[in-house]
Image 1 (cartoon, rainbow, N blue to C red):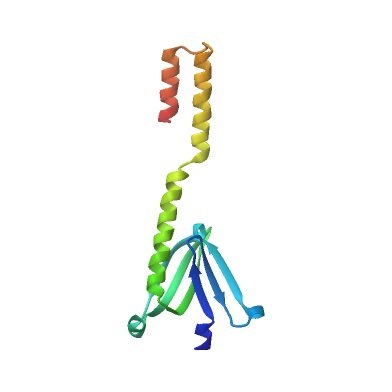
Image 2: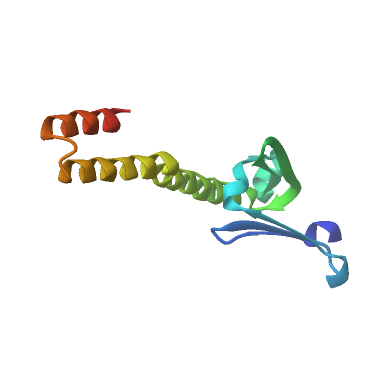
Length: 138
């Protein structure tokens, strides 16, 4: 029972923090940033369902998927659902923002170069439009 009381999981929106242990010099701290979390899952038995505790597992993405888990964590289902929502929102925002930043900046630079060539008279309007369309479609 004391071992269970020595475990604390918290999530602040940016990282998951797991602290285990009673004595300050004997505590273990684990910090997992949100971008390193794949998802979380919960499983509970009959008594865990009614007493509101469960086994929680956090899958991480570090090349190979590793897992962090804890048994008999109080309110694990609610914690897991909040964590999964934050992770999904984070991934959705990142996929929108970072489609392919290197390619986007390359396209922007190339488009600027084409505009400069058109403005200096090296390219006529027809050549500019053809090259611009080719650049945008690729």
